[in-house]
Length: 214
Image (cartoon, rainbow, N blue to C red; front, top):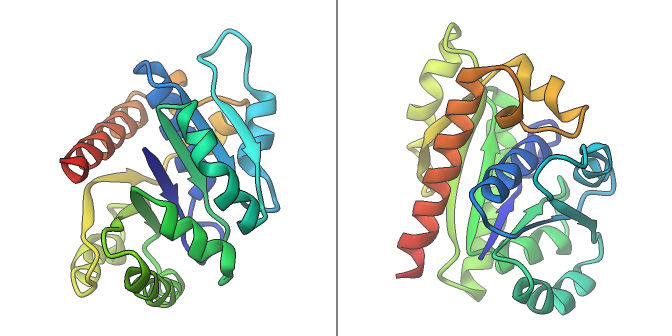
């Protein structure tokens, strides 16, 4: 199955979410690959820092949409789960990522700029639905601060869109930034609450894949 983590705004946490999910799935026994489509290559850089004694997560860079379309079926046959780390660009590559997805996860932070960028991304998603009408998508609220008014109201704002939000939320925790610079997941770090929420998120993602595949 192909899970894409994509949006049109930088800094929403796509690579952090992608790498953490990949470690969760690998720990669960799924052979997992990350395809990094961003020219910054954050997921690939993370994989190069990953300690050898941790569960293996392979990450490759593929920034050309034609190459991605051409290679995805062969790659998919070799892995249980393929995670596509999306690029924050309104481009052919963004459309390709949406069309290839069995599940499209759209990270969004509580903020006006993120909401504006999301509106544009949903237009792109709706255009892709004309070509393929079974693209399942979900929002994931990321870097949530329960103390702020906007964080508490964001779910209500998102309900106005056609795409539902996941039940899971990822809070604004230092563990996410500290672990990634060491090639780790929060699952392998010291913040128990972060471990619990990323595990819940991974399990909800797998359940959505099962439902969509029925």
